[in-house]
Length: 73
Image (tube, rainbow, N blue to C red; front, side):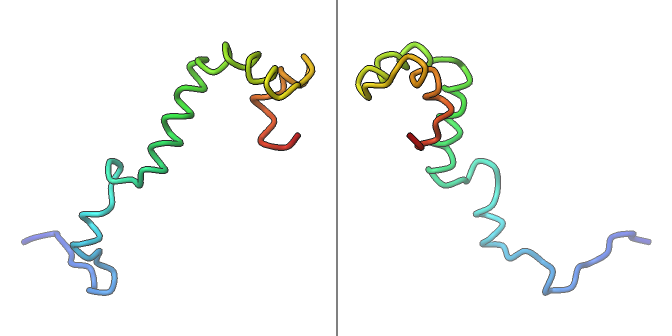
């Protein structure tokens, strides 16, 4: 006797949607954000912050806030 149960048709995931879903089939924007997060957590952005602050004519205190500014100056 089989213990497998079948789902009603309205609860089944269509085959074309199954092909589109999954961790590796994300839009390019998702991969770009993930890559940017990895780079920022690795600390590769920190050495260039003083140069960015100079170009923005920011004070030293504001330069330290750059990673946390979130676009609001």
